[in-house]
Figure 1 (cartoon, rainbow, N blue to C red):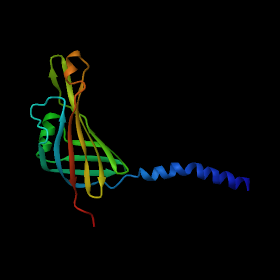
Figure 2: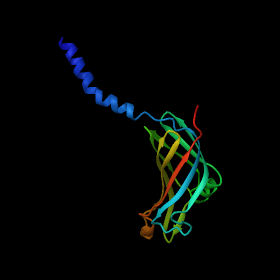
Figure 3: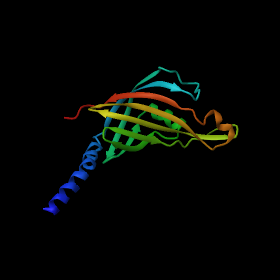
Figure 4: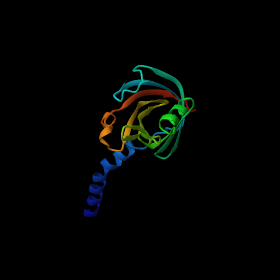
Length: 167
């Protein structure tokens, strides 16, 4: 009887952990999406950034292995990312219906004695076949005092898109 009570208490003690694990099971994010991207804000003073400007019909192919995700941005936006960041493929993870992906920039730029690259993150969620979230571009600098203009700035874009429904 005492053993059964201990087992029941042990099971009840683990129940919240078991329930929370089920909530974090990754959704099936993989697919071919068509994305619309809207410029949201820019504290980096990018000369070609216009708040409210929208780019439509961006192809995005997401592959998934359990909770690991890769997102390959298609042309013509891939060419812009290649030019500015040095790549167009993001990697990251999906937890539940939310995901976070990063593209670490490899193209360096200079401003005085400041050298920096730009890292880009995608934070989003999936609801059925609708994907939505934010893309944030932030400089990663060498810490030189000349970097004060880029040290804390960010450029943010909002996105949404769909994939064909699965049958």
